[in-house]
Each structure stands twice: as C-alpha cells, then as structure tokens.
Amino acid sequence: MSIPPFLCFSFPLIEKIKRISEIYGILSHKYKEKQESARRVYLVNVALFFRWFWRGVLLLVILFLIPYSWALILALLTAILLDGLVRLISKTLMLHRLWAVLISFILYVGGLMSITYFLLSVLIKRVIVYSEKFPGFIREMYLTAILPVIRQWEQYSQTLPPNLIQSIENTMEKGVKALEGFTKDFVQDMVQFVTLVPGFFIDFLIYLIALFLISLELPKLRKKAFLYLKTSTYQKISLVYQDLSMAAIGFIKAQILLSLFTFIMAYTGLWLLNVKYTMLLALLIVVVDILPILGTGSVLVPWAIIVWAQGNHHLGIGLIILFLVITIIRRTIEPKVYSANMGLTPLASLISLYLGFKMLGFIGLFLGPAVLIVYNTLKKSGVIKPNYKI
Image (cartoon, rainbow, N blue to C red; front, side):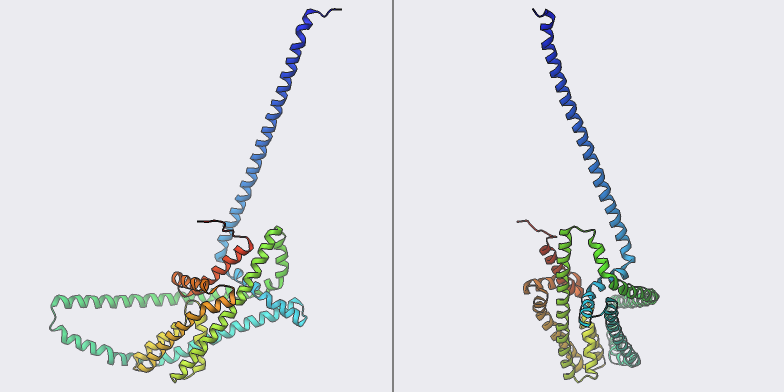
C-alpha cells in the first residue's frame, strides 16, 4: 500500500511545527524566569531600601534624642562600669543582686558627694579668705603699682609729642572698654550659670534614679539586647566590652598612681615653702589635677600671681617652680604609667598624649589614649579591618 503524496509533505511540516513549538516554549520559559528574577531583584531592592530607610530614621531619632538623654546615657555607662563591683560584692558576700546594687550605689554616691563637698568647702573657704583680703590687696596694688605709673606718666607726658599722647590715651581707653565688656560678659555668664543650676539638679536626680534602676536590671537588659544580635556580633561586642573594661580599670590604676605622685610632690613642695594647711592644699591640687580641663596650674599659677602682687616674691617663685617640676616630671612618667596599666606601648602612649594635648588641650590627655585603646580593641575584635598597604 502506497502513502498518499500529500502525507509525504506533512511529516516535515509537522516536525518543523513541533520544533517551533519547543523553541517557543523554551523562550517563553526563559522569559518567565527573567521576569521572575527581575521581580525578585525588585522586591529585594525595595526590602533593602525600606530596611536602610528605617535604620536611617531610627539613627536620626537617636541623634535627635541624645542631647536630651545625656543623664540616661551617662547612667547606663556608669552602671556598666559599676557592674564589676556589683558582681564582686554579690559573689563575695553571697548577697542578692538588689542588695549588691544598693551597696555599690551607696559607695559610689557617697564618694561622689564627699569629693563634691570637699571641693565646694575648700572653694568657699578660699573665696571668703580672698574676699576679705581683696580690698587691702587692691589698695596695696594701687599704691605700689598703679600710682607710680600714673606719676611717671604725668612727668613723661609733658615731653612727648601731642600725637603720641593722644594715641596712648586712645589705647588706654580701648583697654578700659575691653575690661568693661569682659566684666559685663562675666556677669551675664554667671547669671546664666545660676539659672541652669535647678535644671542641673533635676538632671542629676534623674541620673541617680536611672543609675540604680539600670544597675538592677542590667543582666536582663544585656540578655534582651543580645537576642537581636548574631553570634559573631555578640562575640565581637563581648570582646570589645572585656577589653574596654580592662582598659578602664588600667586607666583608674594609672590615675591613682599619677595622683599619688602629684600629692607627694605638692605636699613636699608646699612643706618646703612653709605654707599653712599643707595637707589640705595638696589634696586640693590633686583633685583639681584629675579634672581634664583644669590641672595643677589652675591652682598654683593664680596663687603665685596673687602672692607675688602682695609682695611675697619668695613664695610666688616657689609656687611657679613647684608647678613646673610637677608638670615636667608628670608628663615624663605618664607614657610609662599608661603603657604599664593600659596595654599601650610607651611610644604609642607618648604619641597619643602629645597629639591629644595639641588638638584638644588638657582634655586631650585623657581622650588621646582612650581613642587609641578603642581603636586597638575594635581592630582586635575584627570590627575594624585595616587591610591596606601603601
């Protein structure tokens, strides 16, 4: 039986149609896959956008709230620093955390109040003493310093050209106006400071209450915070926390050693100068020296100027020499003390102290090593990876 002629042409046509259909199916499938991939990329981009958008909004909110939340932030940092003492008391005395927090809180507040009372009492006593001596000091300065200058000016002014006299008088008038402006600004600053005192006491009260509550709830807060962290992030934060805690303890040890050295030098120098209240004044110098913005010069230099103006040149020169000796020797041993207690090399300590002092003044002596310690800690934990070469 023979095949009809039209069927001979239909078989190749059918094969072509099937082939075209397969190609169309493949292209249609690829097109659908491409559309699905594009849709997934779009959804991922939208999700990433909103994730970073809300993170940015949260960051802006946090930055906005930070200036109004310094008391709470300071309470949190203080609670973290005091947590070691709380755990030590709880473990040593076998006490519940509530009682350990209460004891450490009383010790901290008591020490803070004692230092504040000591500073204020010494300051008030000095102000009272100098206010009683101030009128006599002004009169003596006028008779011994200002009046002779006026008399000499009256003699010399008769032989000077009128233009030079006018120029000198204009300069003196500008100096008087500048002094008046300084006095006015000082009074305004003092008035503004007095108006800020009530708000400061309210913030300080909030700080103390928040410190106690955060110290009590710190383990729970730490567990809740770690629920939102990855294991690697948790390990990095734990390492950073441990290293910074050790650095903070080392910093406290270094400050105690430096303060002890300052006290010995100040006490010895004041005793050799035959100054009254040697112990009290040496303690005052140590406390002021701990403050980052002030330093020993805030006590010794004004004191030396006052006693020099009163005519006691021996004591004035002695106080200046004492200030120079304390400053030079302290700056010499500071890098070694910091390196021994904070894990920094002497060279790194010296560089951080020098750059911090040059950039920020006295407060840089504290922030310089602190920034270096934070950098080393973050690099050690892997948060910062400086994998670059020049």
